Image (cartoon, one colour):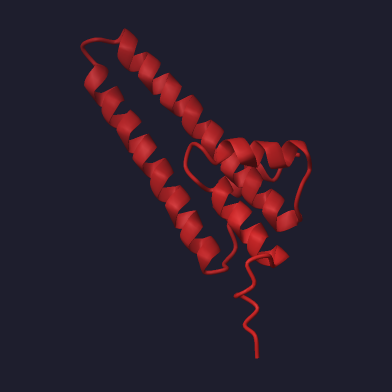
Length: 121
């Protein structure tokens, strides 16, 4: 009896691989935005793309704001740099945690953030 997970061209497996690519920290935002722009994939794949885009753009805005604040405030730059490092580390950990949830075939939902990301097209 053949195992359905052995077929490398199975559409469900290709969909999961695309979803993993969307969840790659920083770089996965580009294919996720592309998938949203061309309205490609089913609802679960679009949900992963929206979540990745929301988290990636949120991280980028936070990173830029904290870096700009650290650059302009010389004496108080250390706390801003620490906050910037914590934000980046948290972003990477959340993306890896979402990859683990995808690997376990569990839903990709984050309280609060998923509600915001559901408003994207």
